[in-house]
Image (tube, rainbow, N blue to C red; front, side):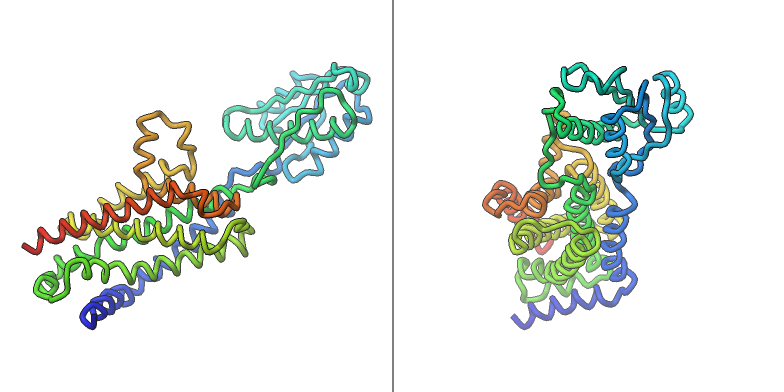
Length: 362
């Protein structure tokens, strides 16, 4: 056990000695959380609207005031017809036009009142989101006025204000933990090979599994520190609630950190140089963790082949479990599938790493 602890201390000193790398490992989560929380956002904010109406009656004015009072829209102009509104859209004077049918107020109770939303679909996703926001506000106002066609309202659960941070924080957690734990661990054994200290490991009385665990523990502690930083920033700065159990969220996160460490160790065992290890971890972990984990694009909308590949990405299971616990507030029993898959991944990766490491001892 004394020798095992000495291996842990040695690996921790390797990390603490390189202060620039340590600064990146601690500073990167902070920068990325602020970047995704404030700069990169899909929220609807201050959309310029032009209203098209033959007459501004009481109901139309209420809808216009409700739209303008929200943080989503600003009424910037009035138009007499749709052609004039389209000219404003083409001239970038507005992003959306809302057209009220003639004699809108007189037909509000007989179901003949109509509202048309004209949106700029150069960005289809944002146009759909803006239209949904506007539709919800208009339907809500029509329902409160007793309109016969205003009964179909949308109920938004878990994230009623549709804050993009609610979606990005679990994804950023998975991406950061995967990058830090896997990429940094991937160079741990390779570094011993390049520096010629691998012989010390080979002749040591410590068993291979203990050497691998000793390599993992310092990075596990570092991953937990980053996890605490991420949760602190998300809760106190980005105001993302932790609806579920903090203990359950921490347990799932630590399990994912172990998976990431295991994957990094496997890459470290299979490669011969630190450059090759960094390239392999970057190509295999960074891009899939961003594009195929469900962080930005939903997995369900991908082709079947890519869905299968996405399910092989550990971050996809962690992000799914994290969203359920953190945003939806479910118990850990509701994420048993994700927990089981990540446990199998961790055991499988550690077993393969151990087998490959044994071959190098022969």
